[in-house]
Length: 161
Image 1 (spheres, rainbow, N blue to C red):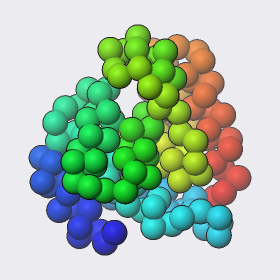
Image 2: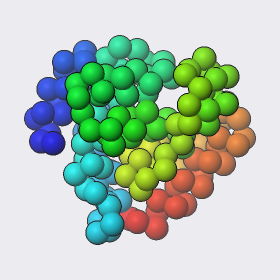
Image 3: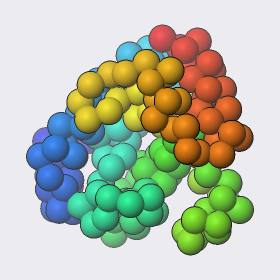
Image 4: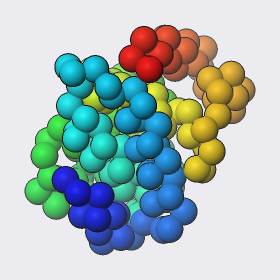
């Protein structure tokens, strides 16, 4: 999907210019991890551009869930909807979703494309690329297992950079 089409979807969903700028920064970083021929670069680019589409509705944790629903309502590819739903931190288990009052479904990134977008989003604060250490410092309030998951995802993804 062309960048202009993605931006149109973000605007249609109610996303601000700040959210759109963040999505572009995540896209730029995500593409740095998508050089392996096994990776669908178009899916990474589109998924990264649309990963925060749910922020047009809410800025809380359920923006990923809302974003997946928006993607489906726009008849976008299920692979894009999955990237959007699974980009929070390094993913959420069905039990964690339930505890957070989200739909109790597995939201762990599984594909390389899902993992790349989640990792890139972890390393972009606003439009600025930050270090993994900075991300973990900002995530200090998260349970230890989630912080470890973010670190493991980073270690796995750094192999592709």
